[in-house]
Amino acid sequence: MTKTISISLSPNTEKDDVALAAGLVFQPWRWKEGAVAEELEKTFEEKFGLGSCFAFNSGRSCFLAILSAINLKKGDEVIVQAFTCNAVVNPILRSGAFPVFADIGKDLNIDVVSLKEKIGPKTRAIVVQHTFGWPARIREIQEICEENNIYLIEDCAHSLGAKSNGSYCGSFGDAAFFSFGRDKVVSSVYGGIATANDLALADGIKRFREGIKYPNNLWILQQLLHPIIMEIFVLPFYSLGLGKIFLAGAINSKILSQSVTAGENRGVLPDYFPKRMPNALALLAINQLRKLERYNAHRKEIAEFYAVKLTDRGYSFPFQNAGGDEPVYMRFPLIVKDPKAVLMKMKKNNIYLNDGWCDSVIVPAKTSLEKMCYSPGACFRAEEIARNIIDLPTSIKISIGDAQKIINLL
Image: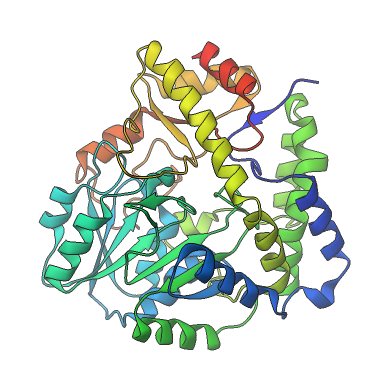
């Protein structure tokens, strides 16, 4: 049977994760309340030198908590970069604020010149995304925020373990949020951490969490079933087509949840955001966090292999020189002339590289730009990148041999 190579179908899941999830399925008394979420928070504070940490059921919930803590008012503006996910924009809309989009630089992160141009009298916060684990120019942006009395919020959904100037991403802003989504640096299917270096913000996030509940048991069960179903029923049979049918059936029958709902593409968050981090998902997250160094070392090895081989073949890719930074390479982005043709050729060889980060400046591609308050043409470089980018996998499931196969097809 041909091995399925994928960039986003549970790329972190290993046998121990499946066994843990399977055991928890039959222990519903451990699903909601427990001490593990607090253990996860303390681990984050100590391991990454962060301020106060608070666990939630997703990065979206984390961001909502932070936005609540800074007391956004209707009509306030929050600057975000184009070439981002609607999971970042929707919490801003839910909070009653208005997203303002800045263009990106060659590193796929927010462009400092464009950022300065977007700051206005209603700007309350700037969200800095470390795209695909590549640190943004965070020191410069930190100075801009201080000069303008604007909150700096780091979006670390892609950058767990990445460093800039010797310090971990997430430690520079007034607040930051991390995601443990199914294809992030570590995964508990859903989950996240909000952190605040400002005491007033930490109090605000804590109060916000005290006012929300845990997700219901059905939602928790959907997340616990995800690694089991993906590893046993979907991925082994994906090349035969049966895996795709099983996955679609599991989602349509509500056995599994979607990563991004149709409502989110239209600017509406589902009712399971915001919620607290359930104990069961905290257990999955802790188990993955123990493997972070191994995962990120592997990502670096694969990314460096791509870089050497693709440079020899004349390909262009954004991540050229890390300088003093230490990226984590959640993806390896590549600029190509005809991404759709490349994705199709890969698919014919049982390599699935369409992770949603293409075709639109706000992903996934089905996202309504109008509902996101984005005007086409506003961010030229981001739109050009979105038209010409593909991402190569770097996860623990990708071997050097797999990477060479991808390079040969390119």
